[in-house]
Length: 133
Image (spheres, rainbow, N blue to C red):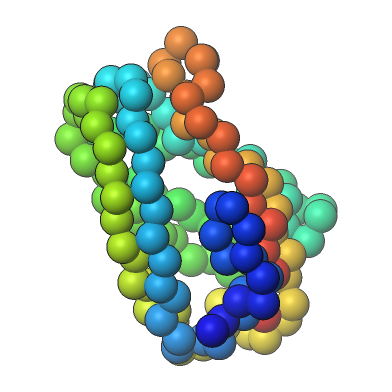
């Protein structure tokens, strides 16, 4: 087991080595139709100093994240629009790359990811607090 504690929402205080597979699952109830123009917005601080913000469409085109400092691009495939209300249950198996993108230097990333309608109304918000090494 990679995690030392858990709560109502799942596992916490987890440690993975580079090259490990991260296993997980999620269940999401989409209660409103997601339309063209609805947004995925991230607002982070790297090592409590470096701001990192991004926004992408929630559907209709891929989301390309350009990560500062380590200069890596990640592409998140997004589904076509519209996304009708539905319930999603999914297993996730993600293989971490073999080497640290920070060359072993401990790096802290914290912030939020918000899902917003095109009119600015908040659909959901997620907090992230992670260390990489």
